[in-house]
Length: 362
View (cartoon, rainbow, N blue to C red):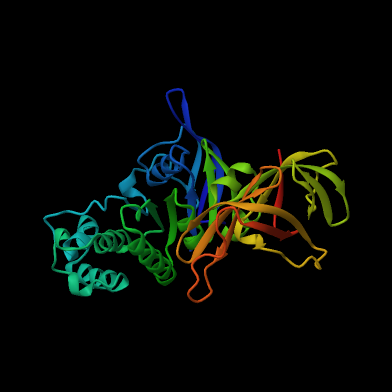
């Protein structure tokens, strides 16, 4: 049986439905992420897991026990907040020890557990410092250590890295992955950052308007989005309107609006005439002045560089096809001493394999 089961949970605030009949299960030891834009219901769902909100309908089952009427302080669940919520008048060690003192643990046990928690987050040398003497990343590690010190069954993390700068956020992501593996506690993580979710998670639930749009491992959500919302929300993606014109055993032909005929992977359950969109990631597209046309599995189109965005390690090229359709492509800047391959208005050719994209019915 799963560690945590969310069964048909609904939460309303007046006429607004924040969480709309959500059901999912989370396994012990899993790093599970609730991902979605602001207002999608992910934080409300997290607050119900913590006990700060009560569901209007449904059940939240933890270790086989219904948590509906269990107050937050009685649940084997701890929460790490975005703003750290550290006590400014307490040292690092005192902050970490606080929940153990509330549980009236013996002093010797508290000392040993605090020391272990400090080692988990590599802050042994900061035990006697106060929060204002620490960096943002160090304060966040103290908050995580305090939440983990008593080894809860479930650790909830509400956008804990959003206040950090990009480089520190990346370092903390690596530390979180390592820490979760070491302590073995189940993490439920809330974020609106798609890259963060893809990097950290065993599984992701993509939420929108109170519902789960797709629940799967990061690789599947990225490469095989279930619908246009997921495709558009997860990373950069071209969505080319298309209609199915022919269906074979493993492939099908689609007519991309105003562009032409292309092959795509067969999608089960659709018919000729089905309208939808081809979801195509920029890094899946080849780009060159001319490209070899000897691969029967590729589709080729000509275009012109409309714009470009230099990002250091890669450059994003916006290609205008002959009919005016704009397609986003991505090339790594891997050649020594070369910052860009193409300039605005350059004539180019682009190509992708039939299985590079994913057809999404309307």
